[in-house]
Length: 260
Image (cartoon, rainbow, N blue to C red; front, side):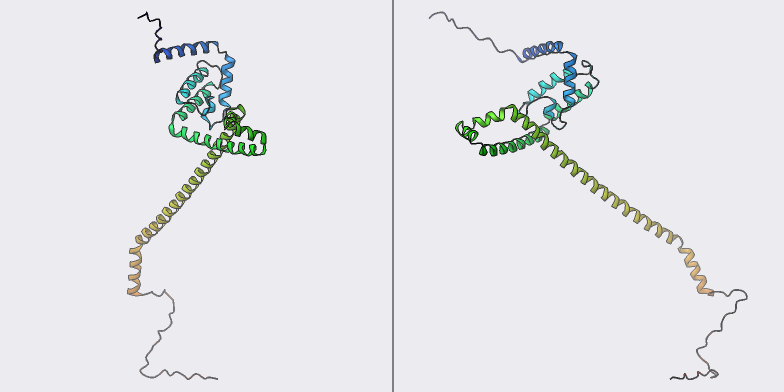
């Protein structure tokens, strides 16, 4: 057999080696970054839509968890208060940390992505209505078997529309959430007020009963005195004679009453 002239392929770099390479590239990148670029990034972060963590990290909606972590590391080093002299660098750094936390939370991430899906559906519906009015684009969509629609969704125009639509939906959902929270708070306040009024009513009733019970002996004593001697006449007071119901001597004769 002839000598084997094939070259053995080099083994892929290990994860540790890859990480070391990325660290070296990051250090080189930040060494070349000017103070103006750091300040601009702080301004960009602080001007982002607060309800969309993807905007803070400057990522697309289909970014993976790994991409989220990598982008956070890059941007956080860029605006770190120890490296960036911008007066709001600390605030921008905190905003990035919160954005990463939301995107690493599966429940929060699923909620945001569900709103992205809703936004896409609205834009697709609008796109189909436009195709019906534009015969040329409609035919192109049919001929390309959907590729034209895919190209449209990958376009910069569609991505910008999607970004704005997601903002609109998230804002609407947040407003609904706050209104619901306000109603719940108002209802809790009303229930608390009713409870306090009920407690106050029972408190007054209990105080009245205690006061009534406290004067019981005086009331009983007064009644006993009254039953024993009755009401005594004041000195010098002339009391009318008692009416006699029986007159054995027949000295009192009732005169007949004239009628008519």
